[in-house]
Image (cartoon, rainbow, N blue to C red; front, side, top):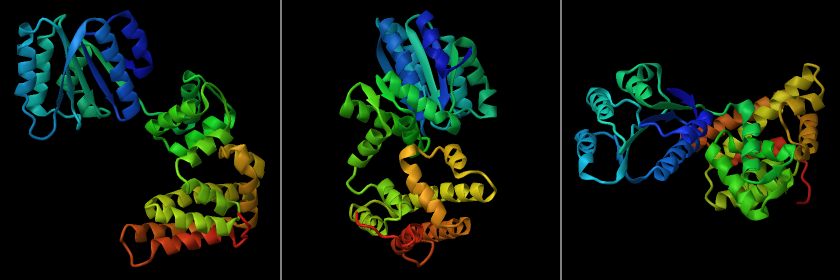
Length: 339
């Protein structure tokens, strides 16, 4: 049977299948699906677990032996096989199919793979697993669904985020669900259950580093050139890679350039800010930045970011940190204020 990750808990509540194929690239969701299966298996008396990882040179006879020696053990066992490439090859495919023919009430067989491509999904071993048990498909969270996913996770942790709090986490984790979960857990530890504002999220992120890359970007966007340059020096001193700094600046400039283009085409800045999901506490600084620089200037700074990225990766003789400083000064437009 083929099911989605959201359906797994419902089916586990009814009965435990003899085998599972868990496939997907979202590490957090894959791990949570596996944890749920193991938890229900323990409740059903499966007290032992053997884990095998089919890396290069893996001896498939180990899996064969795991199935053949079941009668020697009185306890129920989980045999878990991880396929990092999603392709077991001819020998592995035959072993998996053979393993399925040996399943009984004392053995639970779990196979984990990355997202299955078309050929793997249609392979004999994958079809056999799906027919004998369940294929649990882990789909990525789409960008437009991410804030809602974060909101649901926060509420499951007894947090009550305001609209901007969930969006801010979604913006900052760039699709990394594991990072989002870590931020949610940190907020739960810092503030306990209850309401969470965007300012509290921002403070929690800032607390993780005295010189935060996001604070650097905010200072530059807000026209505070002197503070942005000071933070850049602190970031460099802490050993944070210039690649991360350039990535953060590039990401912000893409948003700013899009906003400037929207305004140029006749869209109101308020509508453009809402469409870009700029949270309310940042809108004043972003408005000012879009007002003082043109779309062409934003695109010019993005070109400098490409140069800086190449320099950071050793692809040119330029100084990436110096280019980063120039980008920051250009973004702040020289409007230095006291920090």
